[in-house]
Image 1 (cartoon, helix red, strand yellow):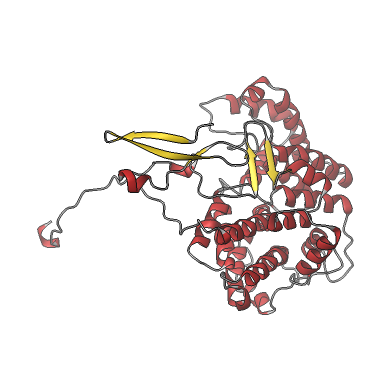
Image 2 (tube, one colour; image 1 turned 180 degrees about the vertical axis):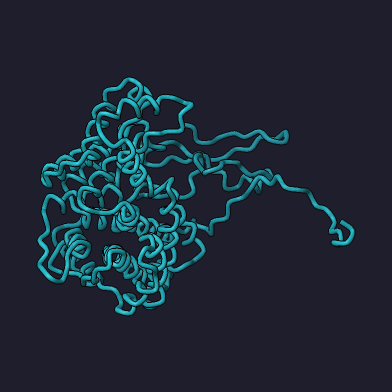
Length: 427
């Protein structure tokens, strides 16, 4: 194993230490590069730059591997619960039975929102996007919970983390209820984290709501599969905001804003819209031909992934869950039929296989969420709900890292060199 990397610049040789994580590529430590050479590196998108040291999540895109604290994502999704995964990400290890019960009780005690926040919702237009509401409400939490904004206090950091995880389902459900003109439902502490969210979203005060175990299980899997995904755009945004010392509620609001972008959290909505555009299974060959035509602007959404060059491990879990949900609901919908047929063709077509364009997690999650009854405008809000666990864990890790500094990327300046000001009358 190489323990140093040599850089030759300006006629001189410089040696930089090579760091090795527990798994994954080696990393050249260039922290002293500018001091040594007066030069920066140029890496748009930071795709070849490790911005931090982390022990939370590991991805091997070529092999289709996703691990949380070392545990494969498919094992977690099939065998654990979202609350177990949340505990794992926050506390490094899976909980014992007593630890899980205590954690569940702690989260349950924080599920309600301050009553004045209900008035906050009424300041939005009825047709406001749920993500716009979530950005505002989550950012406003710091105005209500002053006892958990001191980031130098580990206890306050823990309380803020629990509050964010607990309140996000309530915030998301209220955003949905507000958009459809229905009354808000208070949390029911007798239900699971996921069951409580489903009741707050789809229940009404006029009648009891019974949580369907198949729907609850599928929803819990969706939450687990979206809980964390290494240093993606929104997670990096949370870390960058946190590096300035901003309070945790502001940092998570920043993450929500980043996730809102169609290139990040909006992919499952785009995949479902594509299925609706195709319409019926008999039109699939036409659209596949268009996707293969480089001159045609049409693109198949929900296939392939920037990180994964193999089958997205999360997609395998949701493919099974999608079948279970659709069978349970007994739904007959051309869009869902189209999804199933498109999946079958894509897994057999040489074009897709050669280019490794496998159906990804966004393809299946959009199908499942639509079948359950969520409008597409809620898809990204649900993503934010689940990812809050990862954001909070990443934020805590960053705050506790003695090597962490305020984020300050550099640039390759290509603007004008210095020039003198000319009075307006002389220009």
